[in-house]
Length: 289
Image 1 (cartoon, rainbow, N blue to C red):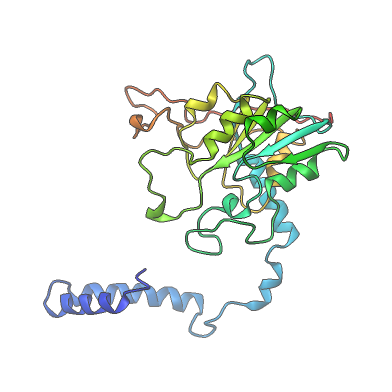
Image 2 (tube, rainbow, N blue to C red; image 1 turned 180 degrees about the vertical axis):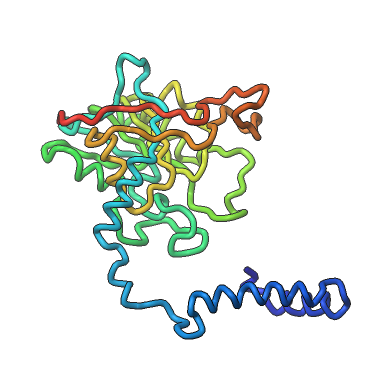
């Protein structure tokens, strides 16, 4: 795990062994365990991967399974400004709908870190379906889907949208590059939520690798979905947004109100989350379009 300064590591470890800070038995133990795994895997006989399997990369059967995993792991955190008037599932037949947000048309953002590159990348860097494309595929052919990443108030006032789907979240990261002391959604995400949800009925789809601060926006939002990192299969998101399948996912960890509460876990004396561990609203599938 030291790819860029391995000679420095070797020199330092050699010095520590020669000066009796690290016993040679510790080195032997580490080498023995590594060799055992390599022998067990047959790497000395066949050191390279079986290239005949590459034809299965991106196979439709695998994409179908990934899509199923997406729709089953989405967590519905809010559905309607009152329990008697849910927004989801959305109708497939509408006059004009808006899709907005920095993450709506970005496979790299959907996949997160360790995608193509160590820290992940922005853009449509591999084959897949963005959430925007999934929306376009899901709705009725006569429904007009308008994409505007970050519309301003004038644009929203000059159009008449039935509803809006806003997809925002975190940029890709891996390891310590993801350390964040405030866990807020970076701009322009908050501005997009404020502008759009202040003018149009909206569902916010949050793409992130962890809970982030959403309490300031919850009252403005009509529906809120934690989509985590859905990867390449954006249709798993629209499968539940438009009612082909119901929401069933539950939170695998507590969702805090503010970072000042952290760390916070079930059983703590002052456990007061925004959404508790295991929370998740459900919907029933519908064939209504």
